[in-house]
Image (tube, rainbow, N blue to C red; front, side):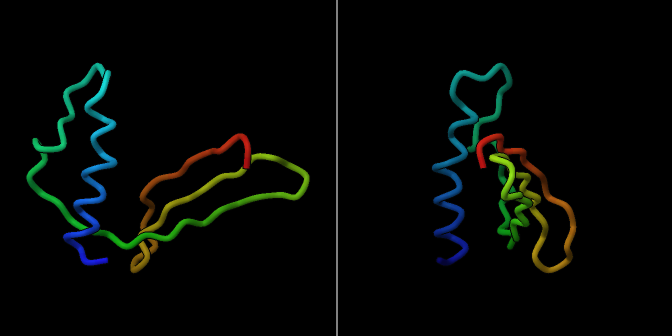
Amino acid sequence: MTHEELIARAREHAHVFEKGVSYDARVADFERVSVQETVIVRFESSGRDDSIRVFLDRASGDFIGAEYHPLG
């Protein structure tokens, strides 16, 4: 996908922030847009049903975010 196509797809998904939230975060209000390649490092165990995902910048390894998923 091109950067433009990725940005269009991201805008579709980002609209969830505009629905029923207590803060004003309209996608159209953010004029600077960039595309960042990321990797997801997923930590799992065969004895557990949960996992941790860590998101890193692919080029630099800088931390982007992390998520805990209680059901794998």
